[in-house]
Every structure is written in C-alpha cells, then in structure tokens.
Amino acid sequence: MKCLGLMSGTSVDGVDCAIVDITRTQSRPNITLLTSHTIAYPPGLRARLLLAPTQGTVAELCHLNAAVGEVFANAALKTIKRAGLKPENVRLVGSHGQTVYHQPTPIREPQVGLIRSTLQIGDPTIIAERTGITTVADFRTRDMALGGEGAPLAPYAHHLVFHMKRRSRLVVNLGGIGNVTYLPGEGGLEDIQAFDTGPCNMLLDGLMLKGSAGKHRMDRNGRLGRSGRSHAAMLKSLWSHSYLAKHPPKSTGREEFGEAYIANVFRQARAKRLSLNDVLATSCEFVASTIVDSCRWLKGGVDEVIVGGGGVKNLALMDALSQAFAPRPVRTMDQVGVDSNAFEALAFAVMAYQTIHGVPTNVPSVTGARHAVVLGTIVPGEKKISIRL
Ligand SMILES: Nc1ncnc2c1ncn2[C@@H]1O[C@H](COP(=O)(O)OP(=O)(O)O)[C@@H](O)[C@H]1O
Ligand SMILES: [Mg+2]
Image 1: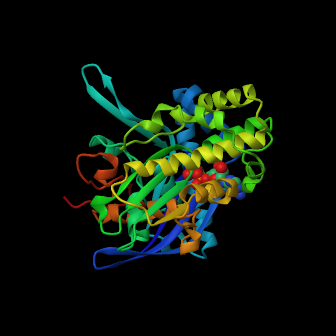
Image 2: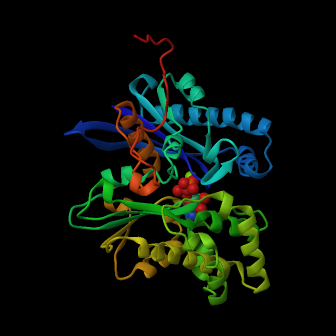
Image 3: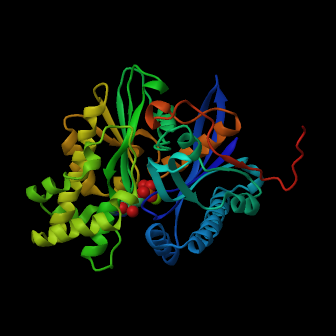
C-alpha cells in the first residue's frame, strides 16, 4: 500500500512530503521510502503562520486553516507527480498539519475540568477533496483526550525503523525543537522513552534572523557558528530556563521558545558584546548539551546516537553534538540508510496506515496517556461512500 506523509514542524519552513510503500509481514509494517522532498511555504504565508499564535484573530486562523490545507494538498499532488504516480495509486494520506498552538500543561476551565489542548491546522477535508485520497489528520488530540502530552509521536516509527536488538540507540531529531527517543536494545515499544529536550533550530534560526537584520533565516550549513567561540557566561544563562530541569513526560514549542525567548537571548548576547558567530557557537553548544543532559532521565546507557531533522545540515550543531556525546558514535539517519529530511513525513504515512488498520500508534510511556489508542481523524477520499449499518 502506497501512503503519503505530510509534515510541517515548529520551524514552519515548509511541508516535508514522503511516499512510502508499506507491506505487512507478521503483523509488523515493512516500510520502503519511494520519494521525498520539501516544499517551502510561500514567505507571506509563513510570516502569517508565525504571527498567528500571538497576534492572530479567529478570522485569521480560520483563513490560515484553509490556506494551509491548500498548500498541503498541492504538496501532496506535486509529490505524487514527482514519483511518477497518479493519485489513484496512493491509498492514504497522513497529514500532521501545522501546529499553531500546543498546550500540554492542563488549564482548569471552571465547571468543565482540566483541559489540555493542541491545534494543528491545514484542513484535511481540502486535502481529501483535492487529491481524492482518504486522509488521516489530527493525530495528537486523541492522546491528549487520554491525559497525554500529544507529543512526541515519532517514537512509534523510530521503534519500527531504528530499534536494534542488543544495541541501545538514542534517536535525536534536530527540528525547531529538539527531541530524543531512547530505544533500549533489550526493550520493546513499552520501554521507549522520548521527550522534547528544548529549543533547537528555532533558537538558531531566530538568532540568525535578528543578527542579520532579517536577511538570513538560517545559518546555512552552520558556517557562522563554526567560526565562532562558545561563551561560558552566556551558556550558563541559557541553562537557566525552567523547562530544562522538568522531568519527562514533557513537550514544548513556540509558546515557550518563540519570539519572546529569542529576543531575550539576543538582548543578553548584545549586552555581553558577543559577535553573531559567537552567539551561534554558544547556542549550538547549548542545544547539544541539553540533548546530552537529557540522558540523565534514561533508564539505561546509550551505545549509539542517530540524528535526523533539518539540523543535520548545520555542521556547527553536528560538531557540538559529536563532541558532547564522545566517545559514543553520532551518526546521521542518512548514514544508516534513512533520509533524515523525510523521516517525520514517513512517520505520519506509517501512522495513517496503522490508523486505518485499527492499530494504536501513541506510546503511553512517552506521552503519559492513560492507554494506547488509534490516533487521528479520518476523512474519506471517495466522493461517495456507502455506509452499511
Ligand atoms: N543547509 C542547512 N544549514 C543549516 N541549517 C539547516 C539547513 N537546512 C535546514 N536547516 C535547519 O533545519 C530547519 C528545518 O528543520 P526541520 O527538521 O524541517 O524542522 P521542523 O520539524 O521544526 O520543521 C531549518 O529551519 C534550519 O534551521
Ligand atoms: Mg520543517
């Protein structure tokens, strides 16, 4: 069965698309990646998406939900074409959508109860309509309805793709936010630990944008960061954020590490008279140290580190990570045969596949949900469906 995964993370850079072929062998899906690429958001839409969580009106959000749905639908059609396929060859779309708000810490709503919430936009009915393909979306909400964080969700796919017997692996995702998945060699799905470690590219991109007066949205290949020097006092002050000391399960996003946080870091760096190169070098060391530090919560040792996400291309960050984990080997997903840009999109294709087969894909030990559950909302692709009651 060919399934298409669509994902855009907290970096809000673009839609990662992957088509995978899934066959089932002994109740375990066997996954082959057929094609993958990323389609950047139009810059105007990206700017609106970044502003929406703090300044957007309901009208703006309503508009963005449909606009992102169109962008995701177009991305799906382009990917299918690129793969030399037709929509009718693809059985399923799994769309993560674009997170605009994630509130995993419960808030008391008087006369209602404790409420956790998350909002991914990119209307799946638009994707199903434009492609004619059954679309699974809203993967996070069901886990939250069970008291979970709704995140991270990729650990299920990490387990399927990267778990090795007798070798404990730490899978690191360098997205806007950093996260880790621990796959103990002796353990199964129920022994996985995973959580968000803190800011990653979101911080690096934000500092680069400010430091270049809006000219550059990322430190391409980590060129500046690599030529800078880490600053001890700055590093220490970065470590003062309370999220870093929080015990898992935990997840975070732009709510905690967005514009206000970045502006504050930038102000501090200015006050300390750090050059942009030095701020970036310090931030790379900071990110790497938060990831290594997270090992204190793991129930066993790490034999090998496997890294994915856009941050793999930031060589300053990768150097810092290798140094922080030494002597344990740090390898990219690409080095073990998996496209590191495509992994999360692949994960949502696999999760959609499991959803229509009635298989749960949240990992309760990771999210804190009361139990495992089939995730998502299913939108039928067929124009006519016959429901037999
Ligand atoms: N060539 C590159 N050099 C440095 N950083 C890069 C490069 N390509 C991508 N990145 C980083 O990766 C980010 C996107 O990573 P991604 O895994 O898509 O994160 P998310 O899941 O948050 O969208 C970019 O915003 C940028 O910070
Ligand atoms: Mg992205």
